[in-house]
Image (cartoon, rainbow, N blue to C red; front, side, top):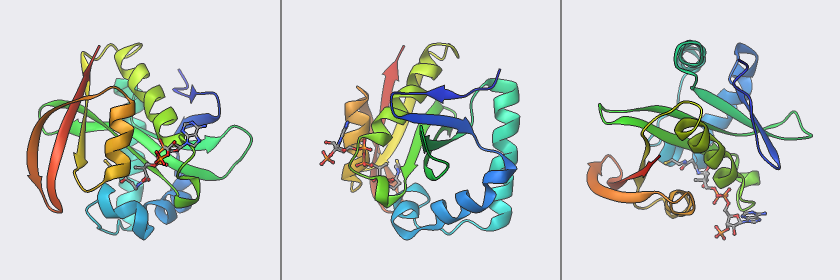
Length: 166
Ligand SMILES: CC(C)(COP(=O)(O)OP(=O)(O)OC[C@H]1O[C@@H](n2cnc3c(N)ncnc32)[C@H](O)[C@@H]1OP(=O)(O)O)[C@@H](O)C(=O)NCCC(=O)NCCS
């Protein structure tokens, strides 16, 4: 199984070691890391670890870190994936390069991941945890049809947890 997801405008491929430089540049950009990693700057070693963990996760569980590109382009426009949210289940995460904001790409990519999770992977639900100050991300989870179920404290302020059941 190649784990590639396609949408109308995008192709999502599992991260590979060849993506290291692009992913490092993308995830350390200030406007991208602010809410994704509470502002932390990931090191090259951490990026290597993320890519290795993702490959293992795809091999054993069918999900991990997907890199988003437009259908006809080699440029990285963003990331989407699934990761554990404490012991509650798997949460969706996503990021776009600022030049790709405002086109509906995050919602389109995240929808493909949620449908993959609830469909072929057979998960009972997908979770999300969003900083309440991250209005663009709140809008994405709402467009995905996710429902808020609790608020928890986070490093940057309160965060809302969402779920979408199969
Ligand atoms: C969160 C993030 C991915 C949202 O990006 P975004 O571009 O606002 O979200 P989408 O790609 O779904 O685009 C939606 C916008 O595109 C517009 N749009 C334009 N053309 C569109 C089209 N053809 N189809 C759908 N929407 C379209 C929508 O109207 C909407 O605009 P609005 O924000 O003015 O209402 C982005 O802000 C980001 O990368 N932030 C940093 C990382 C991060 O915070 N991740 C989330 C952690 S929980």
